[in-house]
Structure formats: C-alpha cells, structure tokens
Amino acid sequence: MTDICRYSSHLSSVQLQALRQDLEEQLERRSRQLLGLRAEARTGNGADDTWRELLVSLTAADRAIAELTQALDRMTAGTYGRCTHCETVIPFERLKIRPLARCCIDCQRRYEAA
Image (cartoon, rainbow, N blue to C red; front, side):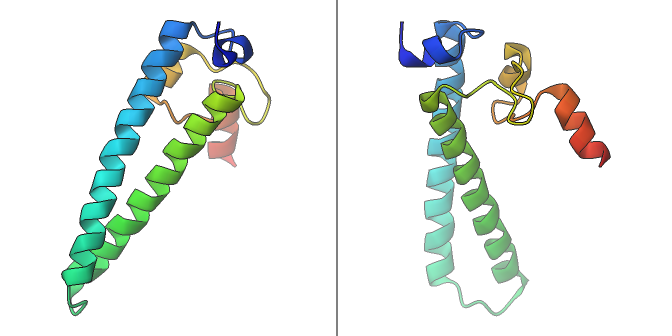
C-alpha cells in the first residue's frame, strides 16, 4: 500500500491512480500550452487586442498549472480528496468530474452563497 492510499483511505489505489493520471495529463497539456503562449508573446508586438488576449491566456494557463500542481502536491501529502474547510471526504464521483475540487459539496455551496 502506498503512502497516498494510507492517507486517502476512502479512495482505492485504482481511483487514486486514475485521478493522478488525469491531473498529470492536464498538467502536461497546460504546460505545453503555456510554452506556446510564451513563444507567441516573445514574437508579438503588443500593439493590438491580440496582445491583451494573449496576456489573459497566459494568466489562465499559469493559474491552471498552479492548481494542478497543488492538487498533485495534496496527493503526495495525503490530503487530496478531503475538504480543505471541514476535512470531510470528497466522493470519488465528484473528484472524477472535478479533480481539482478542494471542497465538499456543502462547503462549496456555502462558499458560493456568500
């Protein structure tokens, strides 16, 4: 049994591996996207709306990479799949749909209602 399974006992090793693979694939895809955007930024002249769109895309890609990295770090730390507010278990079904989820449904609803 891996350290991840020991800490995230509500998720099977198969479930964790599937989620990890999904997160790693997303991270790879976003990293490639960011490299392409940075190359485009170096060659652009910054004089039109395209430049603004490029900056927005760069920011979004940076944010996505940070979120994916944090999710993988939570897996390593054994806290992935637990709500960051109430520490309750986040069901696999929710994580499968939204692997970056940090909150259980109840806490997410409270957050969105605030």
